[in-house]
Image (tube, rainbow, N blue to C red; front, side, top):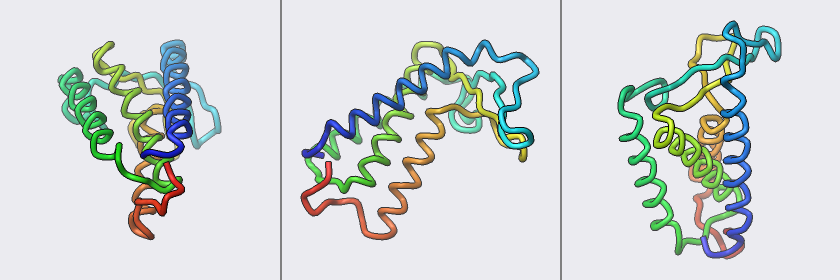
Length: 155
């Protein structure tokens, strides 16, 4: 990740800003929720004390520390690699999402969630969760199609 680090960090910062804003506004959502797109997506406030789908509930600070270790380990591993732009964007989305949720677990002891799918039974989630999933999908597509290491033009 030697070249074009600015683009990587810009994505991380934008994810963190969007995540912080939505999480600060989330407690103001009415208890009954709000339909944004009728029958498809709405807003409903929830506090997640676990990881994805409330796994490891009751240990949010442990999850926060594990997130910190994984983020740091990823940077140590990637710092000398050249990564293509698309998987680098995916890694930046994942980093921003993981950092946003890590912050909440360490500071608040829970992660605020607010996005609700209305067309199927699915856990309420947040912007950071969305960025993590999108980033993982981008990286997986790149790995399955051509790998992630660059020819010298990536991050």
